Length: 235
Image (cartoon, rainbow, N blue to C red; front, top):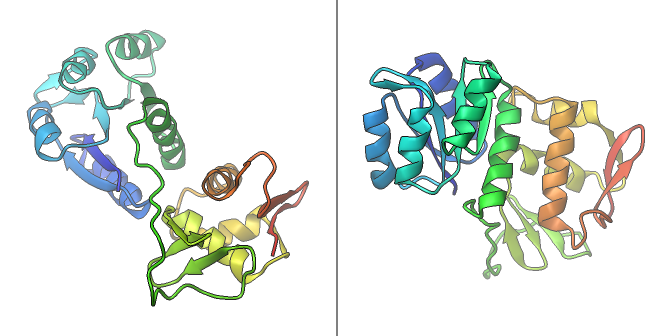
């Protein structure tokens, strides 16, 4: 499980980040000061850092430089400062990306995935042999099924981890093979799980599922695009 360290002193924003990322299957620790953040780098050992630039004990883009000297993990700055100059300074000081508050949680998730891929610091897809007695659903002939107890996709005998929303979408596909689902129907399937879901978010989830399941994501075997409508799962 990918570990996220959130350094954010605003209680409301910090709680929103913690709840959303936890639902997306990240392990999250939030602290409110630069000092606590530096301690958490060693005690929590995060894979990625979300850093506010206005903290009670420190502020400014020099924070990026300080944390970059302490760690090589990706750093995404989350700030109320929209200035291009501040963004350039932050990235020049060691940040990997910059988001201006308020921002979409889904956009944050996509940016986190992107920097984790680029730096090879993210969690790889976890795959392990299916043991005897695992309750994988039956009925598919292509080597793909769902393990309902463990909430994983089983592909050719290997367990593939997904986010909460990805699993819910795949479960709907799996239960209704060959049926075309509009983006609105897929949004309804995960609404309440991902409160920031929209058409673009559905496309991102499908893209991520293809990366995890398809031999060639650009020529998918399982999840097909139906142009002008949405997607369908091929049995």
